[in-house]
Image 1 (cartoon, rainbow, N blue to C red):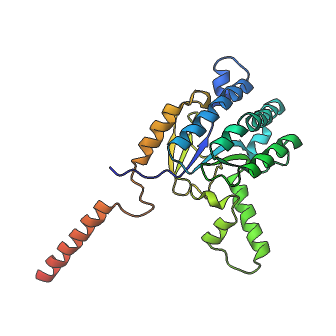
Image 2 (spheres, rainbow, N blue to C red; image 1 turned 135 degrees about the horizontal axis):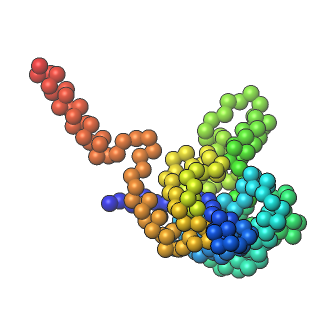
Image 3 (tube, rainbow, N blue to C red; image 1 turned 30 degrees about the vertical axis):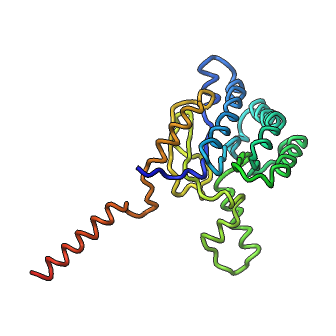
Length: 251
């Protein structure tokens, strides 16, 4: 069976709070434990040959969460930037953040900017953190920016795509959500139009490299038709069409 290339993988890292609560811990403990999983999954995506990995780290809706939980998420992002900077650069990874980072502490914004600049010329895995991000918000802003720059001009799919936050990432091939919920929660709505979806009951702190690899291997064997019919069905349809023409001619 021919395997499909999973060039762009997106992950909704869900279930941290519920993981902690099931162990009678505060929700923030789940985020802390979950943060330890991130580096392993990044390494595995790189080993699998993915060209891009986008992680949903903080959505526009997450601002409504308790202040203590939001503060911990901010600190975990800063910790990642400090601890993983060397590994990102050594592994030729290009790092970027997409979304609204205006409410982050200045020191964290500086760390983001520094790593983005330092890794800009790296040619390996494109690692993106979606932080303060919402899919609808991205599409609305892209449309408004196009209208401002091109008054009276009709927009096309290709033009809209060029106004998205990081158009170079391309379309999502596989979207994974951990934690059991089966929805994409406003994540990369445009880019995931034809993405393969995989929902696992495993909560993010328990998500392993092994499970990630198994999911990728399983999904890479799926038949992706993008609205068309599979080649075997096409050949069968051609054969039947020919047979039908012969019947009509000889009738």
